[in-house]
Each structure stands twice: as C-alpha cells, then as structure tokens.
Image (cartoon, rainbow, N blue to C red):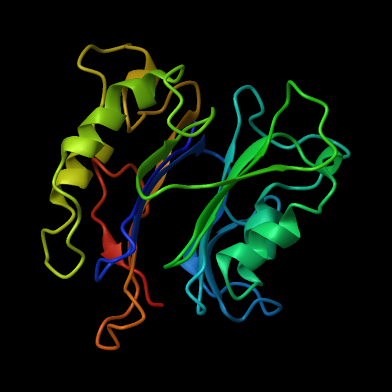
Length: 253
C-alpha cells in the first residue's frame, strides 16, 4: 500500500511539492531514480527491474507521474501489462494535461487496477482504474489545490485508515520549504511514523517494517519551482530504504 501526499499551491514559488513512500515486496529488485531508459532520455525515475517500468518519475519538462496499486491487486498478473509502464508513458508528454488526455484513451482491460497521478507546475490529475467495475477507459479527475492524499483507495478516501489518520496531520503540518536544509522536517516526521504498539495495523503507519516480506522500501520528496523562478531547479530527495532508517539524499536531475 504505497502512499502519496501532494500539495498544489499555484501562486507559490514552489507550486508543486509531493512526498511518496513506496511499499512493496522487499525481494522485488529495483534501482534508484536515474536516467535508466534510452528510449526516454528526458526521464529520471526509479526502475523496477522485474517488469521494466517505474513507480515514480520526473521529466525534464517538469511532469511528475506516480502509480499505486489499488486494494487487493499487489503484483503482476498474467495477460496484463505492467502498471509501471504507465509512468513512462505519462512522462513522454510535455505537460500533465496532455499526458492525462492521452492515457485516458488506453484500454483499461490491459491493466490491473491502479491509481495514477500525473502533475506539473500548473495542473494535476488522478487517473483511476477500479477492480470492482468493468471499465473500458480510465477515470480522469482533476485535483484541486491544497493537499491530496492517496493510498490504495480513492483520493482523500477516509475508508483508508492511513488517510483517516494522517491526512489531518499533513494538513496541519508546516508545508515543506525545499530551499532550506530542514525544510521537509515536518513531513519527514510524518512519513517515518510507525504504529505505537508492536504488531499494530500497518494501515495506521506511514512506514511499514517488513511484514511477511512486505514493507516500505523507499521514500521520495519532490518539489517543482514556478517557471518565473529561473534561479530555482526541481528538487528530489530520495531515501533508498525505510525512511526511518535511511537518510534522504539528493537525486541528480
């Protein structure tokens, strides 16, 4: 159950900031974000070595894409395309609107269910494919300004214990300041939170210690500057393991 927190504030020097914890089988091989694909030279993304796609990436054009499994659909399925391909497909476009429009035309039956968020400095979209509905095309929803949170259910869906627990905390926390060394500290404190009691419901934590070979395997902090701020560049800080045990380090973009 991966988690995404996305803050949109269009009139700010940093109009898009996001944080994402990746929860996955700990034995599934992957590579940290880099330019791994010759056919996508404009893309910096983590590489899933099993299926060849990515869970999260950023393009030189300032598009961010992240895909998350929906409830009960962990892992690949025979006869279905890898959901990680959708991240690379989205990052091939010059803007979030163009990417969301193009991906909405793909055949839903080719994929297991997912939440896909595509965003840039100006717009953000949530593409949804539900397992409990027969869909020919993906749902596309524009995301409002402010904070949006995703797990394996809908945007800001209070059926998710993690969203129910942490969405108010992120809304009340000081927003990130990507220009300072400790500017992410309030969000990092939330991202690394674990259940108070041993053996507690993993949905009550943001970071999951290994649970039957499943847990939080990495974490990302990304910020995109306004186009008017030519002195600022996109920032990506990455923890290549459980973020409560692993330092966030800058990714070369």
